[in-house]
Length: 425
Image (cartoon, rainbow, N blue to C red; front, side, top):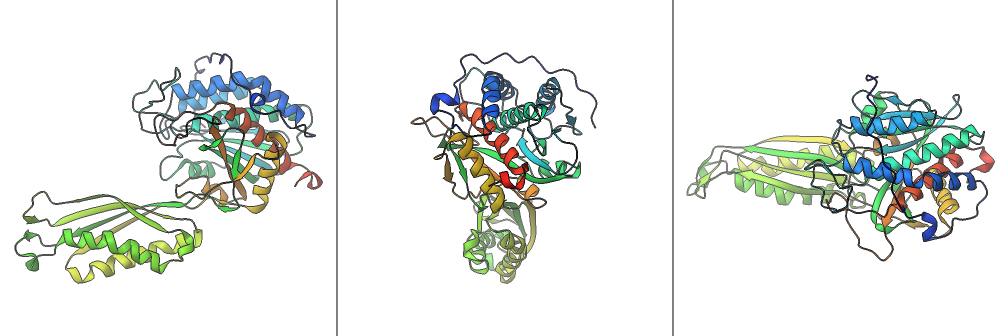
C-alpha cells in the first residue's frame, strides 16, 4: 500500500448541471427510488468532480492526484478505500462476507492535446481525457456513493467492490496490476461502462459475446546484404521484401484464420533506407493485429510468424519478428449482459437499450473477464440532435447527464447481480 496522500485540491460545485430527468422522466420502477433520489442529490458534485479530473489529467501509472480525489470522497462517505501501489483505488461496500460484485472505472488520460474549448479543459499541455475516463471515474464513484447509502439502510444484499484502475491506455494494462494486487479476490461478477459519443445520452449499447477486439502490436525487421539499385540480384532486397510482407501477410491471415473471427492486420509505420539509388541493409514495418474471437487470437501468433517466414524465405533476407500480446477481446457473458440490460430498463426506461456494434478497438477490461464473468456497456454521451464526436480526439465533448445515467445503471446492476435469485432477471 502506498503512503497516505496529502488531501486533494477542493472541488467547486458545478452550477446549473443538467438533470437526467430533463431528458425523460425516471421510470417508476420498484426498488430504484432510493438510488434515483440519491444520485439526483449528488448530481452537481459528481459533475464537478468529473470536470476537476478532466482539468487535471494524468497519464498511465501516474494517476496519483486522481486517486486522491476518489479516495478522499469515499472516506467522506465513511468508507475505507485502499490505495494501490503507485495509483489506483479499491473500495468495498456492504456485507463483508461472501461474494462481491465488481464495478470498474479506468482513470488514466491520453497523450493528446485538449481542444474541447470548455472552461474545464486540460491544464496539462499534451494530456487530455479524450476517451472519457473522467466520466467513467465519476460514474463508478457516484454508483459507489449511492450503494453505500443503500447499504447503510440495509438494502444491499451483496457486497460491492469499486475498482478505479490505472493504465488502461497502455500495454500491458493496469487491469493486470489490479488482478495481481488481489482486486478480483472474492469478486463473482464484474461490470463497467465505456463512453460512446455515437449514442444519445440516456441510452446504452449492449451485446452478448465480443464487443471489442484483441489488440496486439507486431513488428517485422528484415536484414540483408544491401547494395546499388542497379544490381538488386546481388542483394537481399529489403525494400522489396518489406513490400511483400506488407501486402501478402494480411492476406494469408485472412485465409488461415476463420473469417468470422474479424482478424485484421493493419500496418501503421514502415522505414527503410535514405537514398533513392541504394538498397538498404535493414528495414522495419510495424502494425496492429486485431481479432474479435479469442480462439482465433490464440492461434494468430503462430500463423503470423509462419506467414512472415514463408513470404521472405525465397528473398534472401532474414526476419526478426516481434509479436507483443496486448489484450484479448471483451467477451460479454450472456447472464451478465442480461443483468445490465434489465438494470438499464429499470432506471433509464424500456427503450434505453440498443444493440452495440462490435469494435476493433482494444480494452483491457477484457482481462477481468478471463477470470470472472461480467459485461461492459456502451454509455451514450451524445446530446440528442447534437454533434457526434469521436473518442481519442482532443475535441471530445460529452453530455454530462451521462454521469447520472451511468451511475444509476451500474448501481442498479450491482443490486440485481447481487440480490437473491428470485430478484435477478
